[in-house]
Image (cartoon, rainbow over all chains, first blue to last red):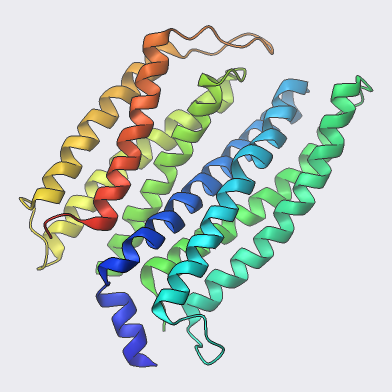
Length: 160
Length: 132
């Protein structure tokens, strides 16, 4: 197992470049869209702006969700190529990555549902303050962003 | 030391891309809120600076890499082009009042999409490291 760890952290077969690129590109879009969503929703609390609330939730749907799918597909692809998707493999950085990914998906789905309801109300002109849904979603998104930070640390430092 | 530098380098790249994603929303017609734009500028600035500083430090720290390697020079050129496009976009995309969508000049939109292309090319260069 230590040989696998050393191999994975020190050298890289060129056939892993494409899945790695897909994984990182997806992760960057995911984190960017989560950041946009969090910042727009925080701004929406303060101003009560319906368009900022919509921007916050739409960025989850059009940015974070596709980014997540691409990131996760790239992760699975490279893990398969490296032989790290077997049950026998127990590496901290891989476990951290998959845990963050699974937990993040749950947080993303809950945020999307909350956002979907809020945007639907806005589109129907039902009014009401978007701040409650925005605050809940901001909390969930912030949690996911912190988890992403931990995942980036784990992926780059590869703790044994 | 290598892992700490790599973490800071990659983290900076994530901050930079987050700034680009926010600007993409502006270019696509989202309202340019003063606070949201300020966060995008900070992410772009801090990320851009971090990427170059920790990237050069990494190249100097790692015996396998040299600062004059083709892929490192390509990255430096792409970074300069990317920052140039970013400066042009920042000048033209200004906060709007209320929920109004901004009027962004075609030239600024073009500069933004060029910046996106430079970011993707930088990522390709970092992953494939041609000539390394």
